[in-house]
Length: 109
Image (cartoon, rainbow, N blue to C red; front, side, top):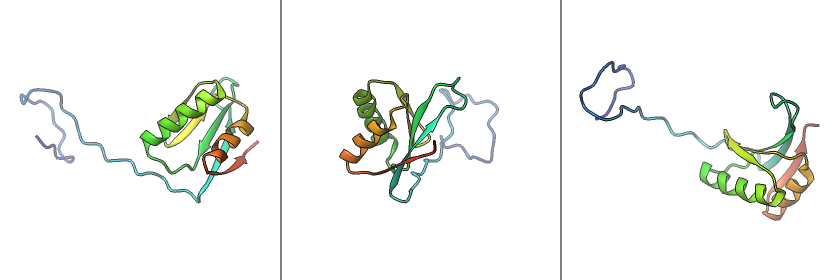
């Protein structure tokens, strides 16, 4: 059953869960430079390194985040095409990303 986005469905006897198709998120294309920001807002003073501008899809981002977290020995996550790593050691992240062939800059603070 295809659901028209202009009609809101109140009740259905069609069985099963009613799901609406979500539009695919487009990958933001940067300028070819990966930037590592330091961020602590809204995290109770804990600093994280936010890696932006990778230009990868979600599956590739998760694999790269996993590799970076293992190398740094810390946690992290992928949010909105950015990788957040729970470390203040941005120099180590820069070195790891440069080994993988990225052009990296440290940005902000």
